[in-house]
Amino acid sequence: MSRIDGIGDGMALLGTPSVSSNDGTDLVRAFGDVLEQALDTVNDMQSRADRLTEKLAAGEVSDIHQVMIAVEQVNLALQLTMQVRNKIIESYQEVMRMQI
Image (cartoon, rainbow, N blue to C red; front, side, top):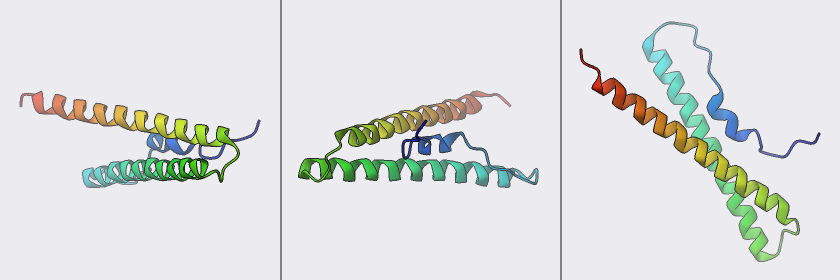
């Protein structure tokens, strides 16, 4: 089975970094790094899809299927990003509602 370029790029959000110590700041930093890497990946995918779309409009791309696949990959990656963002906000709001 052949691999489509970039299909696994949107899965970067699911990766978990290994943290050797139990220090809370290391965990926060690692979580931030994972989010930053995932957003960079989505941004790169968006840029690639934009370039392919521009080339298609200019007549430089003959395979419309690759353009559509790239656009759909970005669409799915953005949907996943929005769901992760919503869960983070929901979790934050839940923590803020906790009584001490």
